[in-house]
Image (tube, rainbow, N blue to C red; front, side, top):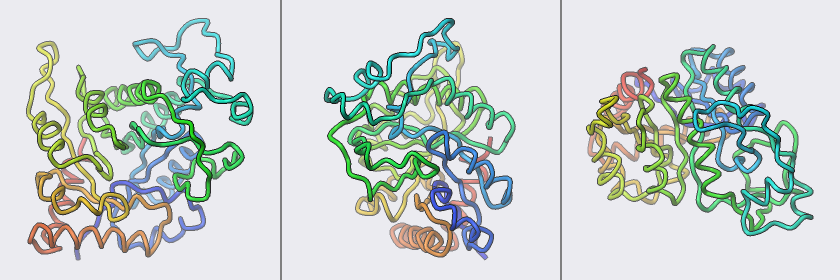
Length: 327
């Protein structure tokens, strides 16, 4: 019997579906968090199904506008820090300049130190936990405040029922939040799952500027070009960095899904080194459909590569267990 691994999914977005996890065909689910409110859900799910779930704790760039920075360059809280005025904060991190009416409906921002503390405490007490989902997104627009549900569903990644505003989150601000999470991945020597949309160069630069690196990186549902992948991420994989640390660049894995990057599968899957290939559903409900998504991408990739589905599943299992999640 072959084992199937889903290295990036969001079943806690649909609590009613979680009871189906024990009966799923998928062997292991790497379950992402995206904000403060779903981190306890992911942790609880791991405790309930430790053999089935790998927990990931991170803060998604879609929600980064809600954070203000109270950390210094060493990721330490700034002494006597005065929280910014709500309107001043949002006018700094959102563009174009938002109206006061729009800002009045947004939640009060909270400190980056709180986010980092919540992630770090879970990394410290759960050795199997990784960092994610975090990253950069060049095209995401903030939902209209009257379409945001400020309750337990606030962090749902699925936004199909929400009307989007014209406002975007500053790229520099997103990068600041990402760097703080990369710092944690390095500090605790944990893999990290990265979201990147229409910003391949910026994401690459942020991860590879070092001087220290997490042990492994998953470019989840990668949407950049195969050429950029080959000429940058994999060109760097054996390079040594800085004479002071002599640390190798992180192991770079690329995860493909049926839902996100299907159109570019042929060239992309052929470009990814066989020992760095991963698969995911990036789906928000546990159960049969998530299983079908995981099997579908495995079947499609096996045809593209001209190998049996069983052999490819065995290769991916090795990539996950002795590669991406081996730390």
